[in-house]
Amino acid sequence: MTRRSNLILLFLSLICLVSITSQQLQAAENASSKSQPKTITLKVFWIGNSYTASGNLPQLVTNMMAEGRTKYRMDASHHWVGGKGWDHHVEETNVLSKISAGNYDYVVLQDYSYAPTHRKEKMRKYGKILADAIKDSGATPVYYNTWAKAHLPNEADEINGMYHEVALANDGILAPVGAAWQYLIDNKDKHNLTLHLVDRSHPSAQGTYLNAAIFYSVFTGKSPVGLKFRKSKGYIMGKGQYEKLKKKHPNLNNDNVDTTHANTTINILQKAAWYTIQKYQKENKIPVTAKQAELIVQ
Image (cartoon, rainbow, N blue to C red; front, side, top):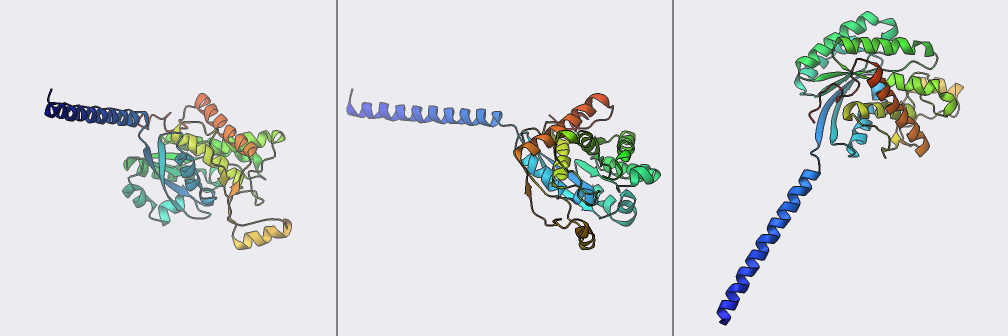
């Protein structure tokens, strides 16, 4: 065989080798892309007051979901007014137009803290008005079931019951935050957590983390147990309220600093959230996760 023939054979062999290697790389790329689930970003609009704003709850849930344990992520925006409820949002703000134009997947609804016990008819009325606007826009309402104040523990069942009623009546999802609080409060002899701030109303950093863990499960359908994200903030009081409470509690802090929780604290909060979600899934007719409501495309 001539030298020229040998060179031609060598050249053809190299072409075949490059072609095979390229095919192998492409196949490996395809296999890798198939093994990594495509992320789904949920566009969520949060409507409420300081119970939602405390510790920037929407951002905390976003951070948990960004950890990547599921394929779901969150694009969160909010509309909150301190000390106000659904009636104010509907009658005094442009929240309905925001819902209509927002192209949201879910809209979280949190009412005035006394609404479930002292303004039931308003809660029913405006809970429906908001839900109708949300469903007309193609989104789904998520009712943020809040907790009883520390000095009014007997109101817990009434609060939970009203949120359950309104969510069921309007084809919404229930986020059973208040039930998770009640579970830990009823078992306070087994832990040293403090969910309320000294104002006996707003959440501490621990309370905010519990709230976020519930919403993590609501939007992913998965347990928050094992999440590595460990930081949260509590409610930041107004100057007048802070100075008044400072007289009774000299060591009271009111700074907007993240609290990095101990592993034991995180474990208790995460397990309490998942226990509550599972309990509601088994015992109630109302969905408490988006998956349970068959709203997320698998």
